[in-house]
Image 1 (cartoon, rainbow, N blue to C red):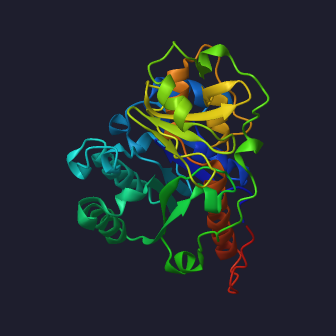
Image 2: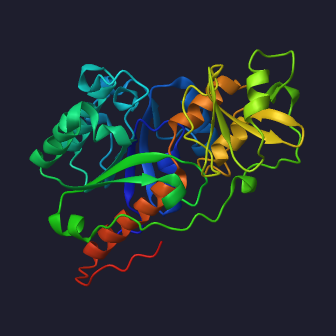
Length: 331
């Protein structure tokens, strides 16, 4: 039996999925990312031995070592409500077929695909039907489920994503179960210290921004996170952080805001990473906040993926030991 199962990660970003599998004892032997700034953050946290900075469409599978598990968080904008809903007509949507190319040519034992939940409903379900049928036609058995970070990760962020797992062996797919819902114990105050004054650049002040009158009227509570949506302020009624987005650092759109003891301010990049479960994430020096916000918004919620990774690895290990009894998963 292997001591460690090997993982290759496509569209690795800053390494959220890699971190989750690594935390569960897997060995990351290859990763790819095209964004140079995300690669900088990845190297800061994981080193550079196996990271390939390149457009995946220019990467030959012959140059990639064999591995047990493939992970892919291919760009989700083509399937997002916030996007144009073009699906496979968008080049980013076509990147699914790069994932399929790796699956077909490398034949991993299992894979994990992560995307926005609207992948399921896009084009009246036709987009997801293509994804599902393509994976099944190439010899894989699959399961999928939409999981919310606040319900499955014990992180106070309202973030719904679809997770699709596949196995070459039907028995292993049948054994796999998605993790069960857990209680949300953490609150936003486990991540945000309202008594800690941040740098002045994070605060909105009267006379300094056109949004201030609107913000002052709408933001009155210290136990939740608000969201500036250019022309209005949205309060999260669940007292959690709204979904972090890639464009939250680009001005007055989707900006997460709080009221601390010193005024109304944006979340800091550090806080955004923590709301994704990157509690020990090393932020590269001299990286702009705009790029850091984008990286946090584009990443995954590490604790959710870690629970899925745990179940996937348990299934494979059980199969390798020829255990026939049902798996008893522990969250």
